[in-house]
Length: 304
Image (cartoon, rainbow, N blue to C red; front, side, top):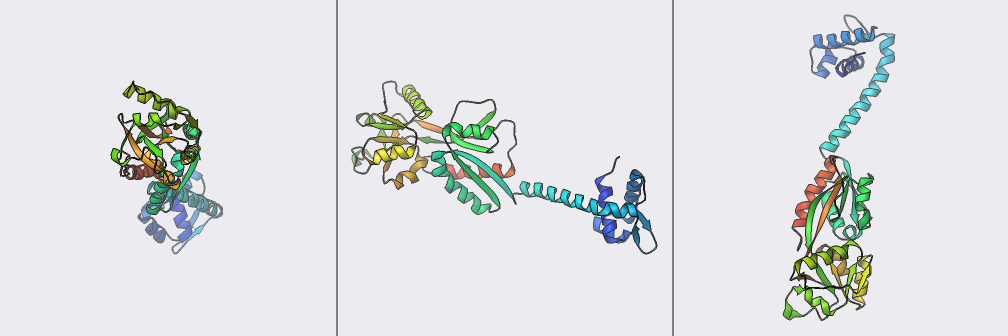
């Protein structure tokens, strides 16, 4: 049975108005074109749907049964098409993001607030998660976007560089490293005289690898490796050592009342990336979120 959408919309308009003239006007077609569509539909269904008179159009019993059912189906169809168009035109939508815990508690809230100020009908859902599970959340379909530090390539996950951030030393006010004569920068060698607190896992492994490649004579051995940056900062505040971080954590460091200085000689950066399902097209809302936050991040101090 080859019934077309144009035929169904023609019958809907005719049944609603009871007039070929009014129905044709509502569809922006001629009366003859409308009449042809109704005849085609009746022939396809094998039954008459309307009785024509000189003044009005009356539905047959078959037409009376079809009209309310068809009206509901076309309403649902139009609603679905409008929903798709609204997503396309950024009138509505949802972005689900999985971000590493430190990013989620420092950088992401500011970016999300700025984005929603311009796109108030787009809902952004943020899931804070351990670094190791960011890609897993994307792969499982729990998040459309994953944001976190660089990780080993995955055949199911595509990664795109979002920004690079240099390593910073974090210490209390009046610490020995906070020497005005040194200026605003510190050398990695300056840390050798102090206990260094780092994050466990790939954070320390990749940092050790990068430092060895850039400066083979520099041997940095952490005095402590902890799971969370909040633990590292609490230890620094208690005078137990110097922590390492990336500049986006500045707001959290301020909460702890600590100081932060960039580390150079050598300058070592950590790349942060956006993780998506390989071969999947991002929703318009997710793509617009990425397009929005890129320039915002690049405008932040120390990030590029």
